[in-house]
Length: 74
Image (cartoon, rainbow, N blue to C red; front, top):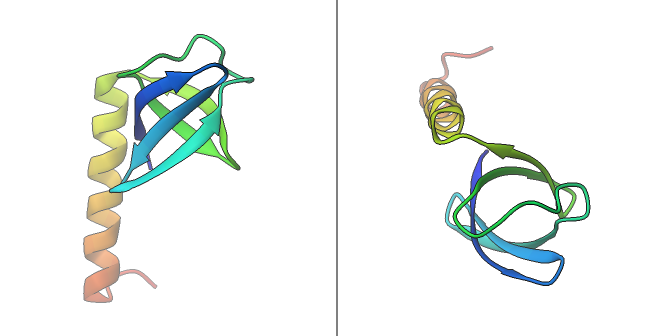
């Protein structure tokens, strides 16, 4: 799920994803800055997303979550 960078301190950024805030390394994406939409994994920023990419991913996650809640995905 995409997150939003809240702030940067050195080579670390604080990212909020789905209401959860965690710190992630910027070693793979040193150009990341506060306000960026990002994908993370294993405490590492992997990708910087455009707003439209992040919005599309969030919509897809919401749709999938709705299907799972209804038992529509097997």
